[in-house]
Length: 105
Image 1 (cartoon, one colour):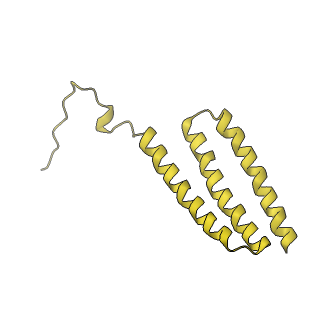
Image 2: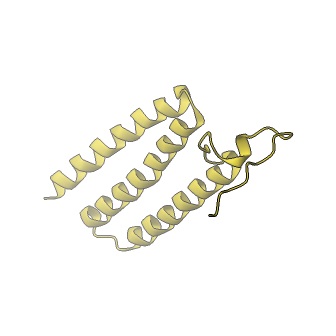
Image 3: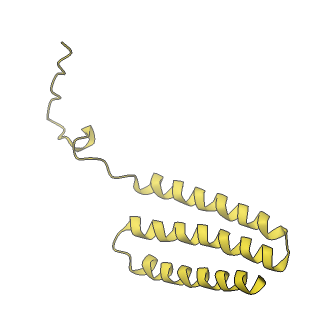
């Protein structure tokens, strides 16, 4: 079973390398952020597989720290770049344009 776990970890390492290509060449910042999220989740999975294979429970703690860092990185990205707003939201109206009154009848 350890050979299977090590093979799975190597396969996941290959997906990280493919994600690195997306980070370097990605057309947009969203694509780059999703590839960075891939690094976080795949890194956690690799650490958990290595923890099973090497019988080292300390790697589970390291995997949990990586998972928390991946969440913090995602929140920092959203705070920095924001999420795209739909075209009808008040942000996309011109400054001089008045808001139409709502019919509450």
